[in-house]
Image (cartoon, rainbow, N blue to C red; front, side, top):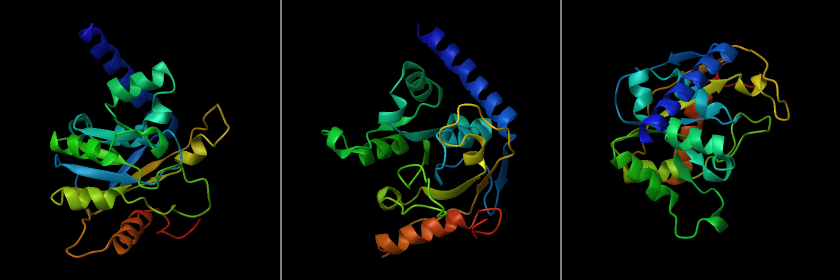
Length: 217
């Protein structure tokens, strides 16, 4: 049974990568960083439910196999297909985003456990999809706490361009458009750096990766 599950996950994962490439022809841009096998936390802007799949699909296979997204269980466990993709295909670290439903679950502890097991991670520090005209929503404290707890792990800013136009909210048929995924130079919490200045610096590093240089289109 486990073998069949593994084969199905491999086939579905390949299908998702192929679909992402057909719809968006995604181009990975590495600026000040190389796609080398090193443990990292990739943090990205969040405008589409497909963001996770797009980043995962453009990583080189060796990096992809070592990288797990951090995903909201309230979304990814809503259907059997999503749960299968989340658990078996991308091996997501499932966290409950709603504090009233967490019980004893500590999302940061789950994330640190995955890092301690050797995984790299993909996270979206805005906490939800950005449906505003602002380049980014205020970051949650998670990446600060992660970097403080595991200071040897690089935080890599990532900017996804155009994916929100491929599948605008409320549309069921995607619009084929070219997308880019830009990876920037890694950052870490500096000695004595407070959370506010760090989160602002992290957001600036991410927004600066926009193709138009960080200004609004």
